[in-house]
Image (cartoon, rainbow, N blue to C red; front, side, top):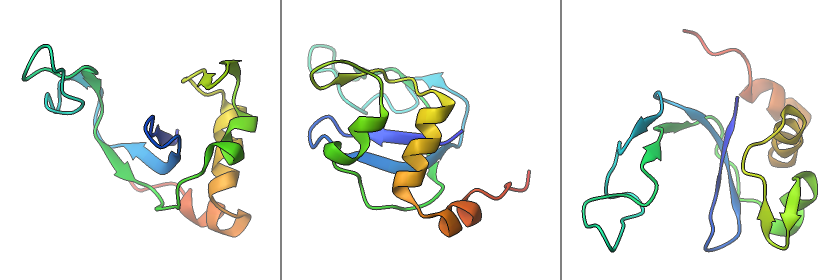
Length: 106
């Protein structure tokens, strides 16, 4: 399953990534540092990622129409298969899509 990273500061969606490790707590405790608790992350549940395909980030007006919205700028962070596929097609064309998502050797 592909991973996408949402930048809260810029509102852009980055991709296309894949998990490179199992999820763990505090893989990098300095990531998103907690100012109230030095040495701890505000987001301790983490996974290492690798780039599956480097793509230009998508601006909100491009990716938001395919996501389920709660209200305003908020959207559900867990994607359905349909949403993930729709986002993939926004990042790459059909030929690139097929090349980028060939099965990877184990």
